[in-house]
Amino acid sequence: MKDSQSVGDTPPEEFRKQLHELADWIADFREHIEELRVAPDDKPGAISAQLPAQAPEEGEPFGKILDDINRLIIPGMAHWSHPMFLGYFGWTTTAPGILGEIISAPLNVNAMTWRTCPAATELESVVINWIRQWVGLPRDFDGVVYDTASVGIMHALAVAREEASPSTRKDGLIDRDLPRFRVYTSDQAHNAAEKAAIALGIGKDNVRRVPSDGEFQMEMSILRKAITEDRQSGFKPIAVVATAGTTSTASVDPIPELARLCREEEMWLHIDAAYGGGFAILPEFKWIAEGWSDADSVIINPHKSLFVPLDFSVLYVRDLERLRRVFTLAPPDVLRGDTMEAARNYMDYGIQLGRRFRALKAWVIFRSLGREGIASRLRESVRLAQVLADWIKSDNRFKLVAPVSMGVVCFRFVRAVVPTRRGDAGPGSPTPATEERLDQLNSEIVERINASGRAYLTQTKLRGRTVMRIGLGNVLTTEEHLRKAWEIILETASEL
Ligand SMILES: *Cc1c(COP(=O)(O)O)cnc(C)c1O
Image 1 (cartoon, rainbow, N blue to C red):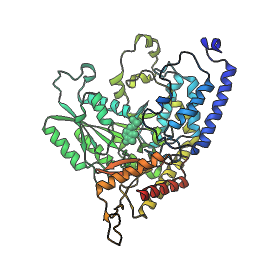
Image 2: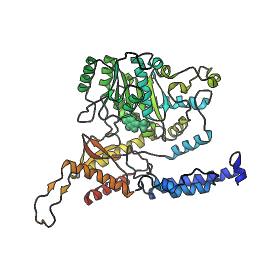
Image 3: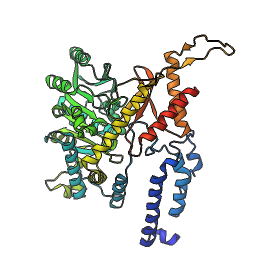
Image 4: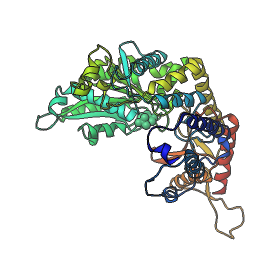
């Protein structure tokens, strides 16, 4: 055993056996996932405490490693693919998605340039084009796949900065007598804009958070005022980051109006459709994509709402050459021979050089489900969100706190009362709990449920108040699961 491991790979017959074992392991996991706790109730450090801190000196058999995965790793996980996992955007895993991931593993290529793997590069262009057609972006948009939307927005703002201040890519920001740049986004937007501003030398405080209205959409009048004010104070407004599907409530900013404003003000318009973008493939959600054709860049995370396994995010740019011009360099000497063809080399479209074959899993899942299969599953999530909203509306202890959008439902427990003093019998009227007390209770309901391992929800803050949040999107979550989750919420609320 030891000798056969000292050089070379596992012998083929042994590998075949391991693969069959693993195939059964994966099928068993999927089939019995509901029997697992959704999440552990551990303290930080509980898992590492059970694992040797020292790196292994000698190799160990796969069977032993798999045993430890079953014994230590699986119970230590929040199971995002569990049907009772209702956190974030209702993450999903699918069988075709798993197959796509598995196929990528033995290939293990590096799609830096077209030459380093022609099929990986061309398939990436193919799936980027499919998604573009599905969501209705015009042909002058083309894209690149990154791991996450956070990375995509940084690249988009890098181009915005370069166009606002040419040759920053070359000369940098120091000692150049540049104005201070400003970027605008709503108070509901993801903080990826600030992270990008940190990385790009724009500075996080130069991302101005514009208040949103009663439906959590950016207030245009306040944005206009902020831009005017900033120009008068010597700032240079360079970009607006609009959101189609905000992280808390899945609200959608007034994008057509923002597009007009950005054109007038000569600002870059970036659309963060990380979650909402996928829904634009449904005719009844086409309105989400209104105004996108006038944007400069759009981010869509197919790993959030188009069933592609994590991670897979597409940045679309109108005239993708604008992105290439910022990030392309003379190729390093070792890649010179690879870059002679007039072909697309994705390494020129961002920071990353080495890139895995992400397009393959997207291609497998898109072909397995088709647009129709994706659409019907998204519609089921939307239906379940409405079903839950109806239960909430018909129970006066709870209140919907945001319009239900796509698969996201935000609600608040509002009818707690402060218990009357012990021994104070009689029908005195109990005092309603304060808003602060309700914040605590809403948070506690979520924490208790998550610690119970029976379901998993998230909490968020809206207008300063703590609320509960459920995201529907998992293909395994049925109305029955949702009913069970609602009962757990009712039960937990009444215990408090
Ligand atoms: C999830 C999310 C992001 C960040 O996505 P990552 O891919 O995890 O970086 C950004 N914006 C919105 C609106 C999101 O929902």
